Image 1: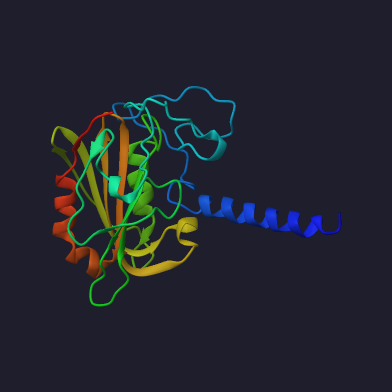
Image 2: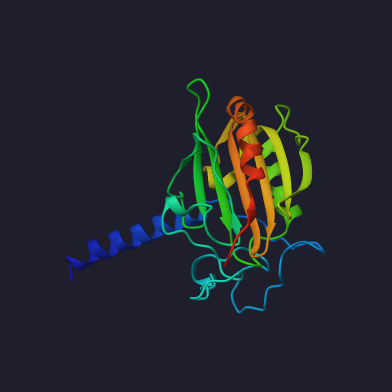
Length: 237
């Protein structure tokens, strides 16, 4: 029994660390959001869990995608080579972007965007929670912009645009300033950062794309991001 206690302690620490990593991501600490009327978010059925309505599925609360797939299923990629090549939404990454294994299981996909003049690279985080997950468009845009502050500590001005790309409605937003992602960024503030985001209304629910990095890098890759969002198109099941 004496030898068993250290093993139990190690197992407990490992489990706690794993849970903490999953909670430190973009949607894990998102506020409760409710889609406005007309937004592409299906109603969620009542659940005995403590997860707020319309919160993305996490842990044991996550719904198991139907074995046959379909537009109602949460998309999963078996490898980085599959990014953007299957599911209800397809896309093509610009040359120079590197597909990377997602930093957490909450992310559908991830890309690394080369930094400018030796600066830290940008990161594109992509999320999808099925037909009804992730919350509404406006609540998520507000949350993204709220992660930025002006040098004086105020709320930055966000640029918004909604366009149709290959018959899909795409909501675009960008903001800049001092960036703090909260738990997702370990509470660290990064100065002179910029975000360009896109939320796509696909046949299988909302897809969230968020590019964040040093302002100089994001501005230099503006044409790449525009080409990326222009590549969005409906896919199969």
